[in-house]
Length: 119
Image (tube, rainbow, N blue to C red; front, side, top):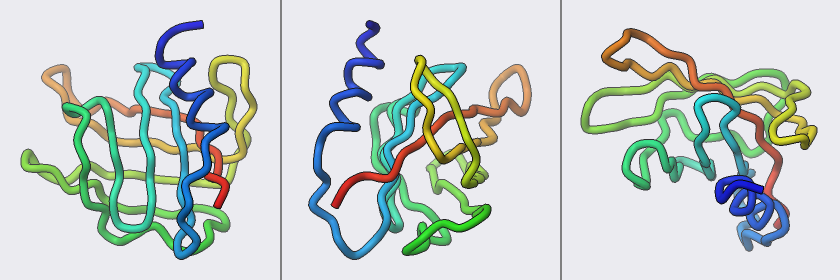
């Protein structure tokens, strides 16, 4: 199991302790990334293991699809989250996330799968 898969497995088992907002634990399909989305912030390991603001904030409950933006010093990154079956490292998860990253090769979609964090 890769280091990222091990970290993600640990995140799946861990409790977040937050009751006010839905939190998502996400793992990228390709390229690989780890992300925790909670309320109006996210921790995204692809961009320097930093914390970033979301605007608008993650709703209390996701139903269907939801669009938001990850706020970075280099500009906003569009994010789309939807309830849709998603498979990553042999695990089936109920939520898919996609980020539009502007790279030197052009606009590149980063797709991943998420699960709800347990309160």
